[in-house]
Length: 249
Image 1 (tube, rainbow, N blue to C red):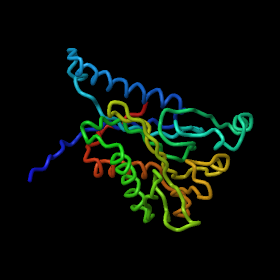
Image 2 (cartoon, rainbow, N blue to C red):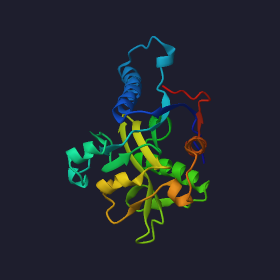
Image 3 (cartoon, rainbow, N blue to C red):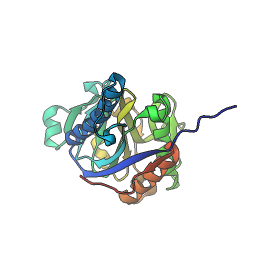
């Protein structure tokens, strides 16, 4: 029996700090487009002048967004429970996005992770990719003695998913993939102000709650410590090497 041993991939990590959602989205699109151009050139047989542009690159972005609701491709506007004037009065931005999923909230105290990975260098399986993203989060939460897992038929990471009336979502996910290059990703509630979720039906989870690491621990979590644990678990789950230089734009 023969096994294909996948070459360990190198991933460039960039911590964007606090950045407006639209700016981060444009930055993701820029990195995605760069990879798609490399793929298109290979398919067409076009010569690539710079060696550094001869291969696709992997990136992992961490960011916190000012308050914003984002609506995925399968989302419905009636899952937003306040009107536009009320939303603006509360200082909450809004975007229709090209990711999968429904409505969700991003805000400070939440780690949003955007992997721009060329899955052709890993595996061409979106379902597996989502389960691996979930596994990164599950392992990270386990390091805080928070037992988390999956909920059948629902993407993301949950606590007490099998206990009716006690289900709590701690991490939402929604991705887009173009020619097997990913973008968008996950939103892990660390010290997030959950009151913003009162004005939406997040990811169509009526009668279920959202939670944070802070609420589960009963104390505020060190968000930079959580980031380091996430990076380590990304390396272990995806068999990647994170670049040693953390770049902030």
